[in-house]
Image 1: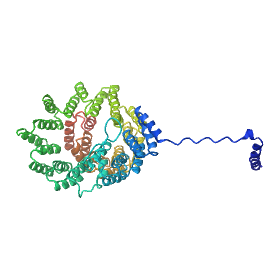
Image 2: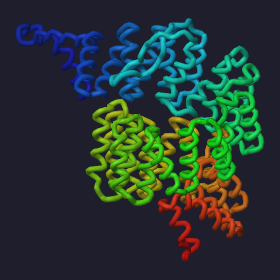
Image 3: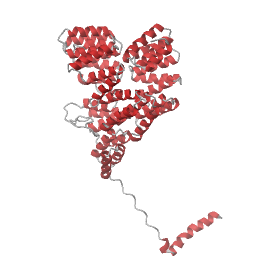
Image 4: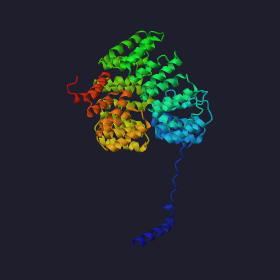
Length: 576
C-alpha cells in the first residue's frame, strides 16, 4: 500500500500547487557561477606571487593557462617551475607546448619539468623536438630573483643553452638520460660532443664519456676540453696507464694549455708522490706560481695533511691569490682541527658569496654540534629569505643537518612544511624517507621509498636508496640486490651504488665478492663510510691487515668521521 499512496501523493501534488498558484510558484533557478576568467586568474596569481605565496600563484596560473593563450601559459610554466610546484608546472608546460609546438623555449621548459618528474620519455621527445625546431635566437635560463626564463641573443643552435637550463633544474644523470642517444653525433661539433661526454662523466657513465671524447678528438685532435675529458674518463674507468698516456699526449700537443694535465691526473689517481714531483718540476719552470701552489695545497688536503694544506692556502691568501674556494678550504681546515671560532669566521666571510649556501650549511653544522640549533637554523632561514627560489634545497639541507645531529623529529617537521608548500615534490619525499630511516622508523621509510619508486620506477637514485635500506636492515636481500643492480646499470661508476652493491653482498655472506665494488667505490670517492664498509668486507674475508690499512688511510683523510671511528673501535677496541 505504501508505494501506491506515495505515487498518488506525487500525482496529486502538482494539481494542488496549481490551485494555490501564489503559494506554490516554482522558484527561479539560481544563475550558474561565472566561468573562470583567465585575466582575473592572472591578476590573482601575480598578487599571490608579490606577497610570497608561491603555491597559490603557481596553481592559479595553471588554471589560467588552461583558458588563455600561449603567453599566459608561458608565464604559468615559468612560475610553476620557479616555485617548484611540479604538478602545476606540468599542467602549464603541457598547455604551452600544445599552443606553441615549435617554440624552443616551450620545449625546453617542458623537458625540464618532465625531467624533474622523472618522465624521461617525455623529456627525450621534447629534446628531439627542440633540436628539430626553428632557431629562435634565444638563450634559456633562470635569471634574476623572480621566476622566469631569461631570453637573450644567441647565435648557435641553443643546445648549450638547453643543457644549461636542464642542469639548473635537474642533476646530471637525469639530464644525460634525456640527451644520450637523442643527439645526432654524426654531424655534431667537437664542443657538443665534449659537452655530452662531460655530462656522461657527471652522470657516472665513464664509458660513454670516453666514447664522446674520442669522437670529439677525431674531429679536433688538439681540443683541450676533449683531451682532459678523455684522461678523466680513464681515471674513473680504473685505467691509470691510459689516463697518464692521454695526459702526456695532450701535454705534447698543447704544452702551454696542458701543462698541469699530468699533475692533475696523478692527483685524481691518488698517486700523491708522483703528483708532488710533477708540481715541483713545474715550479722550476715558468708555470703560474698560484696554480702550482693551489694544486700543492689540494694535494696536501686530500692526503689528510691539514697543516701543510693550511700553509699553502694561507700563503695564497697572503699574496692576494686565494679565490673563494681557497677561503672555504681554510675554513674547513679550521673546523677539522677543532678551531670552531676561526671556522665560523671564515664561513661568515663567504655567507654572501657564490659559495654562500655551502658555507652556511657548514657553519650551521658546527652550531648544531655546539647545541645552538636556533642560531644554526637562523643562518639558513636568512638565506631562504634572500633566495626564495632555493626553498626546496634549503628545506632538504635543514632536514639533513637536523637529522645528522639527532633532531629527526624537527627534520620531519621541516620536510612536512616544505611538502605543504611544494606538494608531492620528489626531493622532499626522498629526504623524508631517508630521515625516517635515520630516526629508526624503518618500516615507514621502506614504505615511503616504495611509494616514490612506484611514481618514478626508472629513477636509479630511488632504486638504490630502497635497495641499500633493505640491505642495511637485513630485509629482502635478494630484492635489495636486484634494485641496486638496476641502479648500477644506469650509473655504472656511481660510488654510492657500488658501495650499496658491496654492502648487500657482504650482508648475504659473500665477503670476497663484496671487496671489489667497495674498493672501486672508495677509490672513486674516498668517502669515510665507504672506507668503513670496505674494511669490514676485508675483515670478514679474513684479510685483517688489509682492513687495518684501509681504515688507517680513511682515518687519516677523515679523522672527524664518527661513523668510521665507531666501526674501527668495534673491530679493533684498542685502536688509537
